[in-house]
Amino acid sequence: MKKYVAMLLALAMLLGLMAGCGGSAAQTETSGSEAVSSAVEAEEPADEDNEAPEDTAEVPEIPEEAASAEDAEEVVVEKGPFEAPAAELPLADGAKLTYFCELPGYMSMFNVNSYDDTDTFKYVEEATGVDVEFTIVNNESYQQNFQLMVASGDITDMVAGASQQYNSMAQMIEDGVALDLMEYQDYLPNFWNALNYYDNYKTIAITQDGTMPEIICIADDYKVQSGMQIRQDWLDKLGMEIPGTPDELHDVLAAFVSECGADHALLLTGSTQLTGTGIVGGFGTVGYDPNSTSNMYVVDGVVKNGFLDEAYKDYMEMMAQWYAEGLIASDFATESNDPFTSNADAYISGGNAGVWSSMSDNMDSNMVSGKELNPDYNISPMAQPMLNKGDIFHFGDSRVGASAMGKSIAISDCCEDVELACAWIDFFFSDEGIKLANYGLEGVSWNYNDAGEPELDFAKLTDGFPMISFGMTYYTLACVATLQDFDRQFGAYSEANIAAMELWTETSDDLYTLPTQVELTYEESQEYSDIWSDLSTYANTEIFKFVMGEYNFDSDWENFISTLKDMGVENAVEIYQGAYDRYIEAYGL
Image 1 (cartoon, helix red, strand yellow):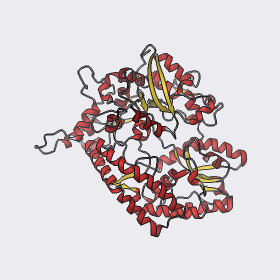
Image 2 (cartoon, helix red, strand yellow):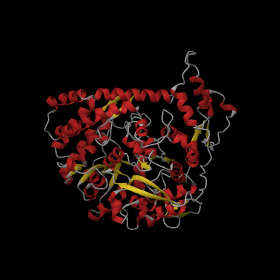
Image 3 (tube, one colour):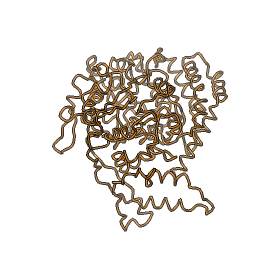
Image 4 (cartoon, helix red, strand yellow):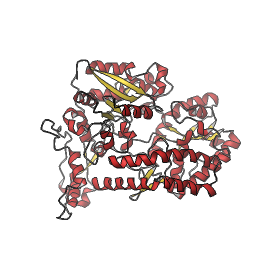
């Protein structure tokens, strides 16, 4: 696994600490930044019986030439390669744990209805001596089933992805979904070994209050994996360039309809892609995702809400115009936005779609399917269209948070053997556990290459599977938190696929994205949820009426915004502003 993370010199940290010591002498209480620093460094055990594992990452000495602040910015010392410890197995002798997590619906096509139907997980159970009983849900039913489980009070020992259902980690702990795992550091030595090495993840793993509600996934080289794509062969036929602005995109879409017969010139599936598609970011604001609890963003320290931006109205007026012109399919609102049940791929490869958003690894499979119908079929990635052509798209995934939150695992207070649950999760941060999670079984889905590094057997991963991601889910462990080798499957990708990820990464950042570390207190979360529950239901209904022409922007938009304000949208912004301010203070940013 490639490891090439650079660490700034300890001098930079020293300077930050010196600056923090310049406060008033009358300030006697511990500051937020001091509290977080203490928790992040994990210097103090939670009690006499729980000592934190030693930080195995070696801190380099400061060279003499880096004795000044000017030099500190230029001198970088690279760490050696990360080394995960060997696993000590078995962990138990037939002990049981229960686990609530998501399994992609497509796996049923391969007779996999639970992770323990796979040979890899059967091996894990035998090797660890831990029998895991899964409660499996799919993407569309996750939220509903999660809420029912929490309401019942009968929560599984371990829960995957719970933090994505909460604005407040404190509330997640209060609900019994998560324990504070800072109290169980002794049972997580492998995880702490990785966290101390990839220390930029500490602000994700550890809250501002110094708690650790989940074990997170750590990725060593994050790249943006999804973005906009376009029919390059149609552009070539029309003599047009990849559009860089909304106006240019309009002209391309109109030509796709009139000259190429596109039924879904701009392919949108449901309200998520209508209001949350990246095109809205080109207007300098953020879209509304009904599956999310927030459409907040931040610019220069000020938290904003997309609904309240005049730019959001401009965007919606444009979408209504495009809908009226037939650039968007008339039935888009009823299309599923679940990637495993939607008809998107059929429209794309069938020649009905001109521009869409999708995962990069879908490009290769859509190319194959498309060329079966049309030998000239070709797809290119495109950057998000911006009002000012060439500007950076600032609403991208949080570069650390996106890679860390996908496979997080909480241990609930219903778990009767917390130490065993910790040890089981911690196994996947050992050398053997990392290999199993990333590659599967040696000799089955991977082997060592001549350089002595694990290498996936791409022929095996694609044998009988329409996409390599299906094979990855089948042979590896997509249900656990681990140290993820992000680019392990790049060897099977086409040059176009890799170029797409590089383009989307280069043309976007997360400057305006509300950091994942911004969290609400328990009380704030309750207040915010009360506001947002009714507000989002109302908004999700009204937005479609504007796009489909039932409402008039000149006469009805002002009433729409006024109703949102009456429902508390401005209070919601104030709540997040306070949370963001605490985040800035706590982490000394």
